[in-house]
Image (cartoon, rainbow, N blue to C red; front, side, top):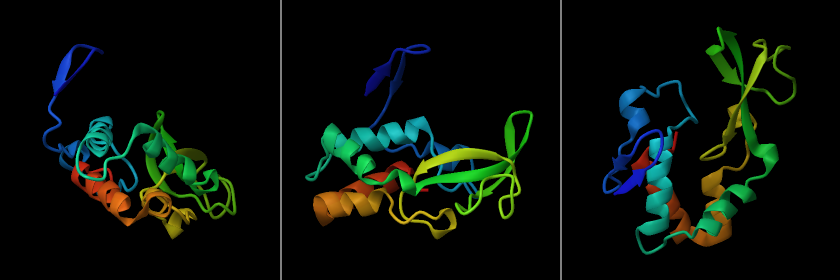
Length: 151
């Protein structure tokens, strides 16, 4: 258990994965998104559990090894500051032009795995495997599946 200090003290149980987004947000159509609670569970368990734990620098290294050219973006139509419809950005053209008709670009970030719809070749699993090998990558992947951050 951990206690946070803001906005008020809250104890979080990390002994079981919550998968908050899956149960509270119905993620169909919300591919490549996540919640803070699910990511907290993922990072904590990746760092503290199992035979193939990651150190903090190793976790950072996985993200650093996914090239910035593989950051995913979406083009969205907005209403009162809220996205109403989004689609993966075709990196051959900016948002607001064909084939990306919706004008607002949102950063999705580095994806769990490669995704041709986003013009993304390498994802986090690919880099965990290439940098740390199969056992570490399998642990990375299983912790992500358990925490629900693998969308």
